[in-house]
Length: 457
Image 1 (cartoon, rainbow, N blue to C red):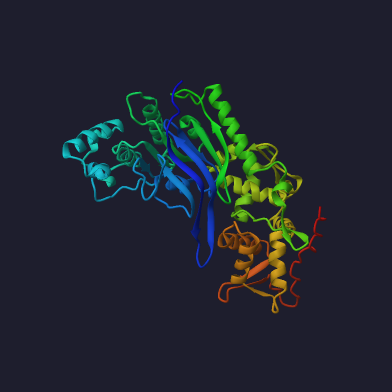
Image 2: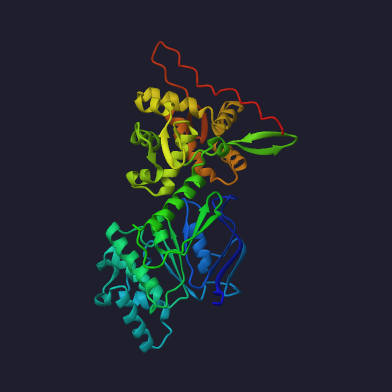
């Protein structure tokens, strides 16, 4: 029986918060427990904002988590991990250094002969042997990323960590580099055996990984771990490969777009003996983006992953659009499909004023807008200071970022003429239309009476 592979990186109950101004903090990771063993290729997959990049930096020792422990080969990690090298999305090259000097940075203390031997080997591996004395400004994006990969490999790390290394590249260059990294993983002569990578590309995750960690957001945490036992090199057109891709599609769709929309919307908080329904955040998208989504759908049923390709946007960004449209009652999401509701069809077919009216009516049914309108109306002069709204949002939705949510509420409220915002005095008030001469201004839109609280079970 083969011996159990050694655990290289071990995270136990890791949580991390970022300061977001004042006394506010954003919880980006919550109680993440994960181990990376020798010969593991782990892909971190999930929506934007789920903490993937933070997590991989914690593994590399570039970020010290707020809580929890990080161990490398059983020893608590203090500072940068000795056995991990990192490849970044934005190349992170020093523009005043040549390719040679950039790549040699991690091994500057080795004897000159050893440095040269390693340099020749890694430049040959990534196909940059002829560019040793070139500067980053003389290289294409793909060549710059090759330099970043060579710099990571020259240290001969036990674990290679890559944070979306191909996302800033054109499609052809990204495909070429993926194949080259895949070739290194498959080669028995190359020492690279263990890798952790952040990606939003499902096919890319299946192409590389032996395990795919699907993360959930707000706050970031491990949702599902999917093992991948396909041999290298992998063929994306093979039925077994496509089956795993479809499985991940289903998991991500379930995680981000629950079939039962109501179950995603209703969250209860105990407040004394009674229960009240807490407001649900409106995703950070604009009315124009949601209306664009509805127009793109038309009368067709569309897979959410196909929508991401048609929008040329990352999956998480499209999910936010679909969530907002579903929250407003304009689409339904059976399985991983997105379908216009009759109300959504009415929006698509309507005039600008009709669209505004329908969106306004739907917004007034959301708890988050009921809260906003109620806060305005209880003010003595019906002018709500923006700082007070930010405090209320932080209290009502502690895992949300109050400032982006504040901007989102303003965007939708102003578009639908529910509210107006005085930037000079930092106050929000109900919208008042300017009436033509000789006519009275129409009354401000009224929100429906609050729903009765659900009976206590």
